[in-house]
Image 1 (cartoon, one colour):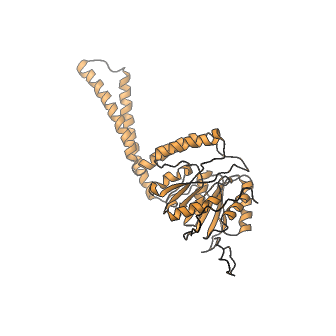
Image 2 (cartoon, rainbow, N blue to C red):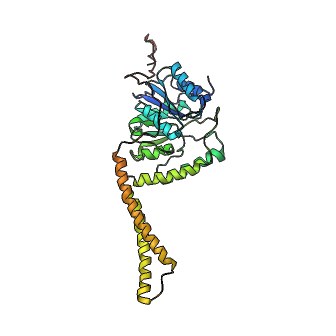
Length: 358
């Protein structure tokens, strides 16, 4: 099933891929028509891959035949194609986290399940990650095959905001095609709709110098309908506020709330001191002045913000020290034995031993 053209290999001639195990994680929601073409495309892209690899297909509570297609293809291709079924729609971030939890490779690639990301870009990105000693290679859809007003414009606005606030300068935060070093991405937990900010999250546990971007192929959608629109720009703004707070004040929220409280308290105190001097020294009536109510309001608001800072400090200690709960619920899956579930590379020409899928 070839729905897209087969490109040439993107690896340099004579390149030797460093040893590793690769997991390809794909969250899917109502993509029944895309499951088989995508799995076929992955196997075409990885046909000559020289290292063990696996595919983790995450069904995010689809209401169509997506879970049935995942089960059928997992049985057809063998145990290196795994299915993870979430009991309901937890949204893309939770589905991606479920796939990351199920992935066993020391290198992890993620991509969308709509055939717009091309698996043929994965080997080149993995090679760059390992040979340049990076922690993340993010895809850059330089030539996006989508409408300007509903997709490209919101994406440009979101990318500009995220880059400015987080300080991680990437041209395309929204591209799901990314390749991570497994030990680094597993040190980050994803919640809400924070999949857009994965590079920024990684910058909290590694240096931005170990984050790079790579131009990748982007195809127009063939099957199904897009789940995104102009409204996601507003959601990004809300998530960005939380992201800014979390990156700057995660371990010291008292400084954030306390700083605001001190400013408000000082302003309120100055106003009340001014009114007090008018009453005592000049005998003026201040009982009906709006400034009196403003001063009291600012002092009370300042005290509340300082108190909120103390409570936030206590909650941050609980958050950092307690075990982190999962943001999804998945159906039980049979456990793999050690060494099971990997697609092994084919033997060199002339070797009579047949390749085998475990």
